[in-house]
Image 1 (cartoon, rainbow, N blue to C red):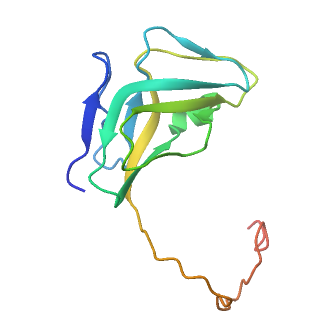
Image 2: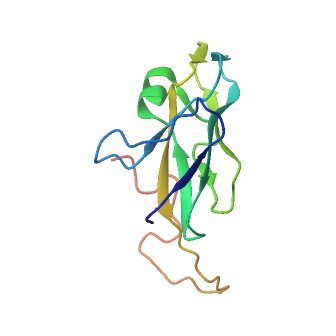
Image 3: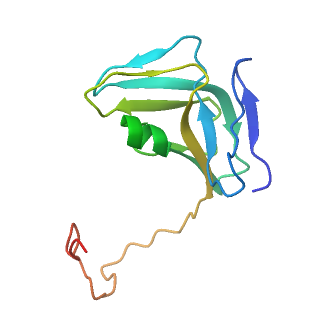
Length: 147
């Protein structure tokens, strides 16, 4: 992917950026005029003030938690990972869930999530009665142990 088109929907919106040369994600900012409290165990939709255009259906934008907010404050995207499809042109918003027993307030211009652009593989679907065998088989949900 060579270009990610970004449209500012409000003057106070921040353009996402990578904090370091090795960062996979670009920080997204809260584009709000006043602080937004998130009570314990509740969700608030936080706008970013931007819209994006991915080059083609060969790409997707994923919205992930910022590790500092998640680990230090228990704040993460309500849907775990947000998915922005290539044909979506509306505002990028982040549904934040406060997973703690303490209220949290999102401040204007605060970094609230990170956006990662990834390729999409669109395979042909083949219905079959035989998936082949593996050593693991259908074992899951802890079948390989904890260590």
